[in-house]
Amino acid sequence: MVFNYDELLKQYRSLWNNRVLQVEKDSENTLLEAIRRELNDENSHPRIRKGLHEKFYFAIKRINRSSLSEHLKTQLIALHIKVMEEQEGK
Image 1 (cartoon, rainbow, N blue to C red):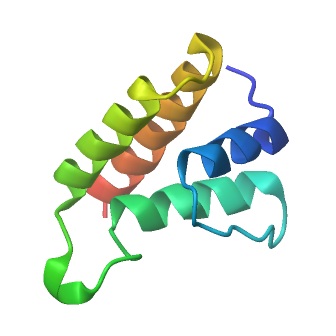
Image 2 (cartoon, rainbow, N blue to C red):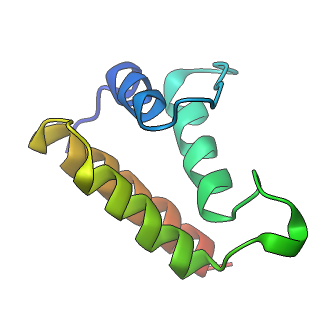
């Protein structure tokens, strides 16, 4: 699957109203890092953080309920699965 990371990053931002994601190296690294942080719940206070699987479920649910095209949803979900598998392997 070929990803247009600039477009995916733009659409990922649209899912999160108040989240600023500045591009560090490139769109790919910025997007993958944002997904990793999301799944690890690093944007929440440590005492209220949810587990990896619960955050994955909520992320997929948010993507699925969005108004994004099915193609973009599929690509964002594929990236979430990729990051999830990497996190589980640690």
